[in-house]
Image (cartoon, rainbow, N blue to C red; front, side, top):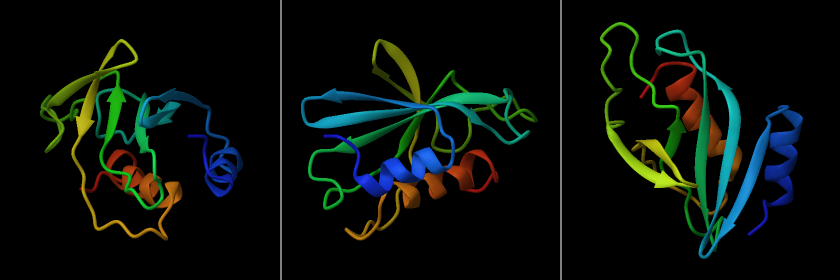
Length: 123
């Protein structure tokens, strides 16, 4: 499924470099060169978001990063981010983050959740 117009506008207005991969039942959105907080052991990563068919009635949930990241101070994986799954022939680190989804939400809401974790160091 292609992006909704407001989602595409959001990505483009924030100058995010991304690619879409359409698969049966879902589309994978990969955001390249996502800037991270200094709390992590690298400056940038790719972020993968699974967009299920039926979105926005179907929720966006969790996100994945590659390369894998750890907390700089402890060299440990962040909380609920120590599982890995293969997509696009790559082992992605899963960040298990859940929140109550409403059909009025969109990609910008999910990206704000991701920003809270990867940029602001919360959650």
